[in-house]
Length: 191
Image 1 (cartoon, rainbow, N blue to C red):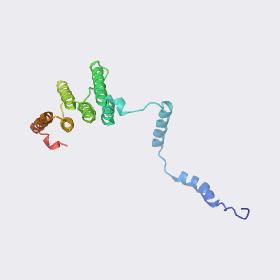
Image 2: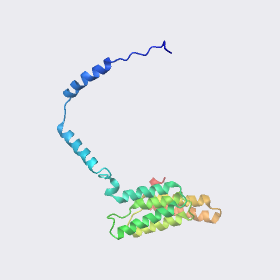
Image 3: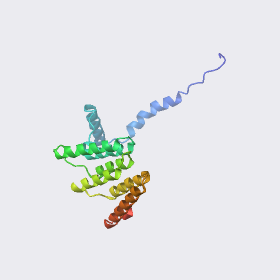
């Protein structure tokens, strides 16, 4: 072990960096305006580190609601659909009380219907129909996603049905929905 030599350190690279770096810095063009902006932004961040400026969820709470509803719909939790609908009802109540400027939109309802389509709740299509009726009462127009998700609910019930008469009834319901989609000229968007 004593016969092994230590590798020599190459100090030439350090010397070059120390002598060249200051010269290069001095020759680079500087933009005082952008430096001032950067310094101001850094100072604002330091003065209020917990505030998220221009956050989407602060500007539009419905976007945040829709993200939460979508998460619940896709979570696979046992009571996700019921919890999603409860959340939607709370936001509607807060809007009616004047707390929120915007009311839940078609995306909000689609997420709740999707929660029923993916959830372990019996009668998913009945819940979806009820939510679509509520949308209509509130003046929210169903889009192709709404109709396709309703079809998904029906097909899920057909797949799970043990009684042939129930599955035939659901198939007829699906056919009438497709006919309705044709009337609304959104039949080409069936997924």
